[in-house]
Image 1 (spheres, rainbow, N blue to C red):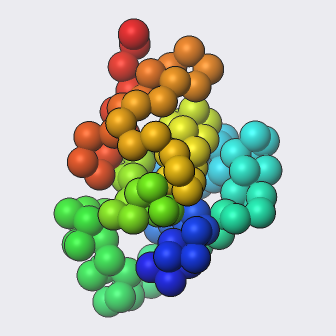
Image 2: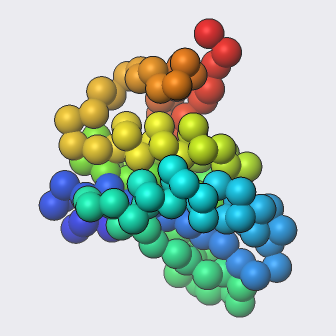
Image 3: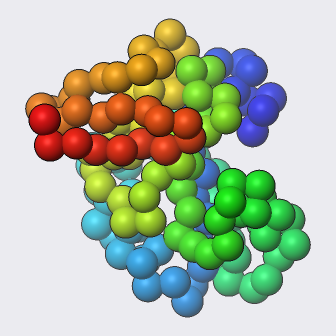
Amino acid sequence: MARRVSRGEVVFVDVTADWCLTCKANKALVLERDPVLSALNSSGVTPMLADWTRPDDAITRFLETNNRYGIPFNAVYGPSAPEGIILSEILSTQDVLAALHAARPGAAQATLIEDDVKVSRFGNTLEQSAD
């Protein structure tokens, strides 16, 4: 991931498992539908899948480094977000698109407005407000 980010790419990480119902819902309702699907398949974006269906020590360590101990886990890394933007367990189209935008090279670091939704970055998380 770090190498791709250093080359200016945005990386979307999806840690999932076959037994995870929330993961399946996120996939069916957000990740496999436009406009998110098109954004994940666009130039300069690399989607990465970590399958935790069977226990895997490397995935477990990755989750622990992000203070997570379960799934679903989704994060976006990029030149403007090298430490990652960790998304909520229940994904929304707006949150995923906002994180992909915020991680791009030259993206504003503090706040961005998309589709009348104010999204602010606090540390490694995206929090949505109803302003």
